[in-house]
Amino acid sequence: MSAWQQIGGTIASEFSDLPDLTEITRVCVRLTIAAVLGGLLGFEREQKGKAAGVKTHMLVSLGSAIFVLIPLQAGVQPAELTRVIQGIVSGIGFLGAGTILKADSEERVKGLTTAAGIWMTSAIGMTAGLGHEASAILCTLLALTIFAVMPRVMRRWEKD
Image 1 (cartoon, rainbow, N blue to C red):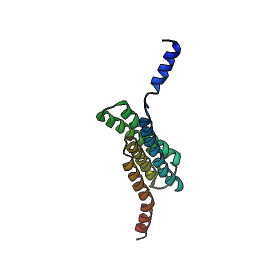
Image 2: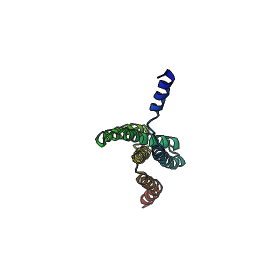
Image 3: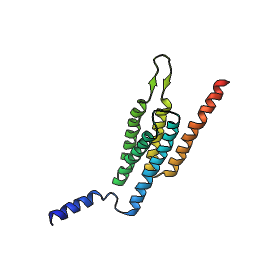
Image 4: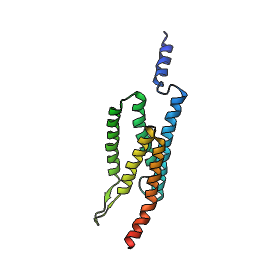
């Protein structure tokens, strides 16, 4: 076997994680759904002038999806996959914590909704990455509903 054949074989084996059109389509659909859904949540947050916007939410969702998708492709058993999920949930907590601020002049904490939104975006990304796209879409719609409806409910409640 010549050196060029060895190099070509090595390169081909490095790209063997997407062996056929079915797997390419599956990966593309899951990652695209995760990015789009994260983008929708990020767009809503950006429209409200919040610190974490479209790019942040898209990256969190896409990253969470890839963290669960790759172990599935590699044949990781469900018990081990739960450890991956636990790591994502813990890690994303640190990112969310960075959005929480306490104002010195008052006893008010800001950024909790942004932190919770980032946490939810990660969960939606994991859901899409695991192949549960319909559930991910439903969760996104529910989160968007909460972002839209709850401020109105709270304003009415505070008036009363």
